[in-house]
Length: 492
Image (cartoon, rainbow, N blue to C red; front, top):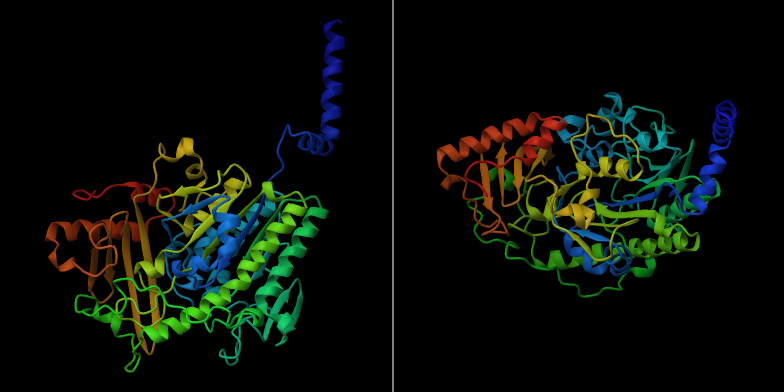
């Protein structure tokens, strides 16, 4: 064969391959030479704390035992809207400009933050994308009620309530904006929102598989958010529950705690073990329908041959305190009960029973999902992909953060406001409140945050901590990651 003939054959081969790229890729996927893009299901619960995990029997078996558990996963703000905005964009609250629940969605939308989210990144990478449940606090104030943000090919979002929130709070009596239609759901057992949202996820999986498209589901129900209404079939099934009491529960001496925190507690707000037990039972029973939903999702994926090619993540937007440090039930603070939440994941390449101990946060979710999908995350992202932590070969060798910024804007309660910023280090937490009060806990010696020793730190240490925090408060992208990975002098 002469050179001229060989050139023509090579050119013809290129043309044939170019014209049949889709068919060739499909064939190569079938015989296992290349792998199809993984599906991703991100399940976000609302106000779920660590104490509820023992009641998620199926979720623990199907996700944690078949994948990985992150033992040090944190939210950078323990408030719904700031946490969700950070999750969608991979940025700290000071960079999303969402530091409070209100105006929440209005700010996120008007500042153009929806133009670049995990939905737009994955959609550009060829994914069908579905949001099912709660989007951002205040949606769809300031826009048409049928409004669908960029990047979502399937949309089923709770419409913000304007009436009496005591009546259901999205468990019953709610409206969903669904792909250009407003659909009302009432009070019948089959309209219980966890079940409705779960079925929509199942339908979307079927539709995406039929289209032969990889899919991403952002499944954000209300459980166990108050009023913590269980599905009828689970109501009363966990009687006489006892809330796990840590040494911080009903802490007797809180004189070392910031007075501004306790100014939020109205007179007569005494919260005792009986209150905690009753509330805990309702919260646990409310999660049982979520646990059942996880089973159905896994079963369908297995039936469709997609389970081994699907990442399933299970986590929460923030934690919840119930009597710790003498406080009534709530969130939005920087104590461990509020900022540390469960995080479970299973999926391709993750060894069953894996434990990740590094400090991972909600700002890492978006870049990690982009990494899973081989999509490009923008340079503005503050977080980092946690996928290397799931690989035993790279887990211990890679550099990872030692510090995390915790920040909250003005929290309005009972006509009082509170704002704080802090550093959650591997070994300590340091907080500055806007009124000048400070907190510092040695988490090695004092894991329950009983002894605030900020007043015992020397001036040079306080100055270093303050300077470090000032830098974190203003950091962006790579600068955030550098500051997180640095080590403050005299601290191990």
